[in-house]
Length: 286
Image 1: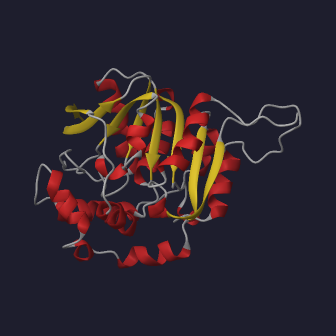
Image 2: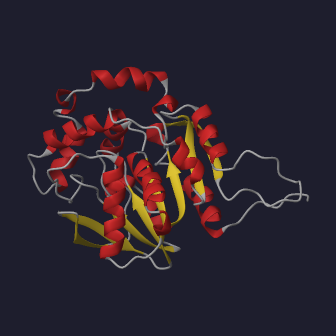
């Protein structure tokens, strides 16, 4: 999630996408838009949610890797990729409700969810607003409160303007797939507005019973303290080896990793995600 939208996406969209294994692409009507999605792999269902200004190809190699053991449903959000924009603001509750409506449309009663950046925020809101639809949540580069953003991020937000995005790789990538090739300025305005949306979800997070794997870079857009605080809200941070099962939620910090570097570390991400989804824990002495 981290409404890091801007510089994060700029680097991601400029980087080459990994080859994917023949996913099946189609659209379904969701809340007045034609939402594009791709299905790949076999196994338990896993929904993948991209970050701001991104699309399915920009998520890179993690989708085909996850599709080796799961049936992956990769979505493109409102105004992103091949999903058309509609006359509605982009907010985290709206994005979460879109995912819930998508699940209903394709007869998915419940699924695991993996979200990155904006997609992680949408996934977190999905677990809050539609608890019965989320089995387990992997939230990479997520915040639950604006107080958790890095000072540099807070300083950057007021300076954002649509003009900053003109002629960028993000605009080029948008035009490549977009239904409305001239719709980029409208999308930028909505995503800048998203950066200014209030965000204080601590009480909601504390009430969650959904197991959550929090993944963050040690140089991410939220502070390390924020990631730890979220982990504690979910019941984590206790001492193991005391004869009690470990909490269901987990925390993984990627070393030497900025926000935009998180999604490109496919092997490392997969090494954290797969054991979490399978309920595996490292064996200790006790």
